[in-house]
Image (cartoon, rainbow, N blue to C red):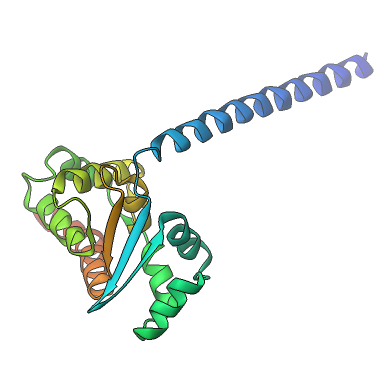
Length: 195
């Protein structure tokens, strides 16, 4: 009798594994389709500027550089010419700003109408410029906030409506650090003081 219980338990475990594997496979295919479809109208090229120098590279090169820290030759030369350490720029492209659920909700519902939303939007606009219209940046920022985090790379991934965007490296470090400090430290402190 014990033998049949073990077999039933084993059979159940195998079925559960197959069910999980099937669900994982289905979600993987759906995620791949969504990623591919979402990139259809997205940014293709990124123009990096630093003072009077510039380099135009594909979005895929920026993503690979940001994720691995290894710049392709064109980006590496551009950074060397401008005295910018590749590892710092790669970190800044992927560094996440974490939003509280309350702050995320406030910013998403009133992105342009709230002073917090305006601050975040206009500061990010100093770093990333696209079509000249803030609408595409607002949409990219809104999509990026879905998981309560934002990064420059994620905003670029979600930016649509322009084939090319400009990333201004002159103010990247300072502006992004200011936004991060404001969102992660100042706002929570103000919320606690308000209570």
